[in-house]
Picture 1 (cartoon, rainbow, N blue to C red):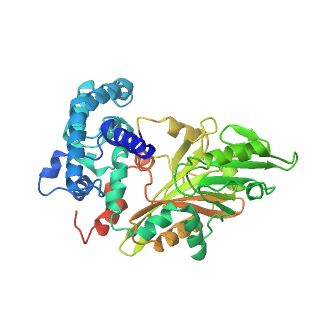
Picture 2: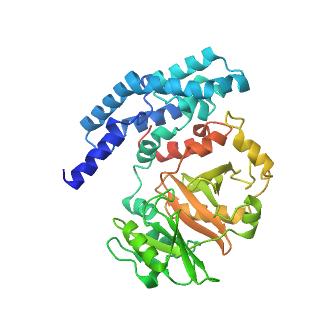
Picture 3: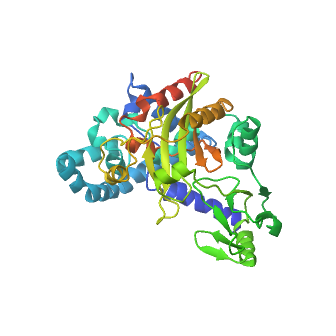
Length: 416
């Protein structure tokens, strides 16, 4: 089988045929008049899913997903979710077994919401009519695609290409991380591009969640280099060989390896780079800061971060809502982070709001920014920012606040 056909077949199997959850919410409330704006937004996402496919393709995928969900995947997930969390919920919040099962059946079969979200978002604290005031992780790809449909190709490219993004932000006078080298797909990594007697960060020009990223540490006392992959590769020949193997198939950029500002390092008790995720949204012609998170890397689990909510207006770390998963909250209190203020908060707000002012046709953007030893640095902007961390800590459904205003305003020319 040709490579392209094989790859396409694997995508079809993963994204459609074997997908264990629906692509969007499919609620009976879509058929009723006079529904809330939150319900209308979910209906819009359902009707505008897979925008590049013809309508017959959309209909076949929706039908197949509905049948496999209702007949097979949903039952197994209800059982597993209840078995994992049901007893704990009853003990901690006194939610009866009967109510839990009825709620799980309701959300699974009347709205096509995977049952694990009942516990993840503490939906037992909300009346059923409020469940569609949330945005769920399983629908996120189609949600962002539908809600950013009017964004220009230029803006989408700017938020996809980290090299071009950094250049545009520098041109706008914002402190982006400079690109030292741009290594094009198919080009061999040269000795002088990476062995510069400085520590470097190497990442794909496109991509997210630190996938395919590597840290090259320069040890001046030994005059040696270590490539953290997360395994450690030593020796210049071995490092070059490893990178040339990994860099096949995509462009890479080389940037300085940033270190935490002393205030951040002392606040978070880690030497790993701490990032902040600030989500902004356009309301009329002005950007607003909607959500903010402190993301502390988990040293013992490479690739994982510990999310802590930040008050978008004050920069104060909050304790969040009372959820089933309270381990984070207890650790937050034990570490003494609750109530602390993020350093240089007003400057961070100004940077991300100014950055979004330069890309106004994108409704929401999740910005990654760091408070480094060399000052604030804007890493990148993401249109596909994750929703779950913001909602597991939020005191109310996200479609009750600024996020709803952004999307209603964005769809004024094409009402939801």
